[in-house]
Image 1 (cartoon, one colour):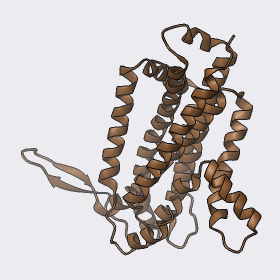
Image 2: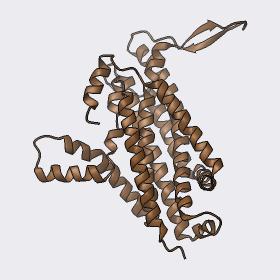
Image 3: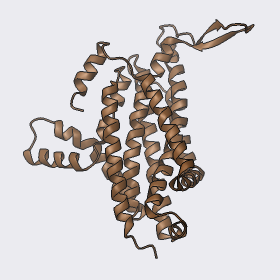
Image 4: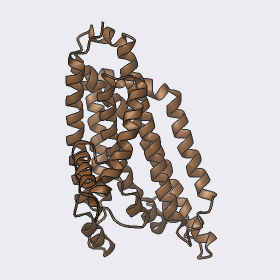
Length: 326
């Protein structure tokens, strides 16, 4: 993680290959893994039911609609950025996607886990051949799946909005808008097939690393929220996750700051070690300015995400193991 400035400098010089193909393969493997888990385990049954429940919640439609509304509004509203409106649009779109996905996952964890335990609904599930660990794991995967579905919907729309936004800004700046499509004859077909233009496509696909890192941050905070929900009510869970979100983005900055108080630096290092360092997943500024996020960095972020998720799920197992449900 500390090598990021050097990696970004190499990316700016064009010495790092964009990781889009590897990321697409990773997303496909991840989604296939979720499908296999859903239909090959008892915890998968709980995951499917939790996902269906989350998708029926009003907050899913509210957050998805709010994100789409902001994307559409930002498409037309000028940023007064001296010709850099597309970069600002990408930065705002990634931030809005993150906020909506996290809001959905934390809220769903609070309602689906905490309220089922307090309402004695969990006793009904655990009376069947499902143990407590399968219950917690299934809840986590189900909540995560609902957030992933939102990310896929918003990410797809965001890609096309960015694709059109680039040409729109070029036209508004008087530079001559890039062609929307180009047409090519294919085999025996009597008509030409429209293809995405390379210039617009290169700009739009830069959001893929950002969406991948957002998904990792959602995985981490969802695991934290599920662990808290096994013991605490909804209000405590939401408040704690909001605090962790702020501290997780602030502590790495305090650790790297120079000329600061020794006590502040020690306290920041302690927080960055124990609590999730969410700032490692925040590459929106680099992506919006055209930097290529190296695959090495995304790989390290994925390993950190996996390690922290496993730790939080294990903690949730321990906290829920002796929880009195009667």
